[in-house]
Image (cartoon, rainbow, N blue to C red; front, top):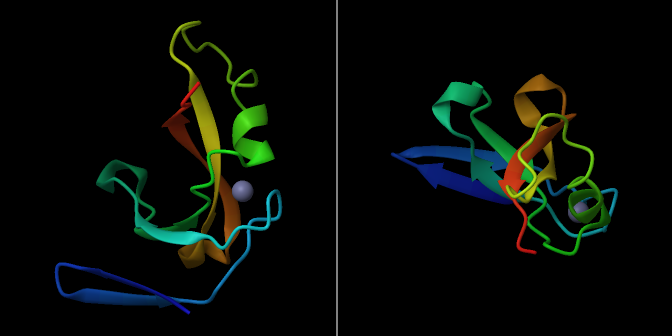
Length: 89
Ligand SMILES: [Zn+2]
């Protein structure tokens, strides 16, 4: 069970493992513009999904080092989503 609390709102989510690296997903409050609310995200910087995504993003600037973290949206049947993040390398 993952418990996320923000502004007095407690969200309880089941434990889920990243299918790419096996790490337990962390609860994370997505930015309001995404419309996701609290989602489960893989924060592993060595996750193969994250590392492999850097070259897959279309139209990104060459020096931006953006990658996609694996995440699931509990409000949408744990549908997998990609969260844009800055790659550490
Ligand atoms: Zn992962």
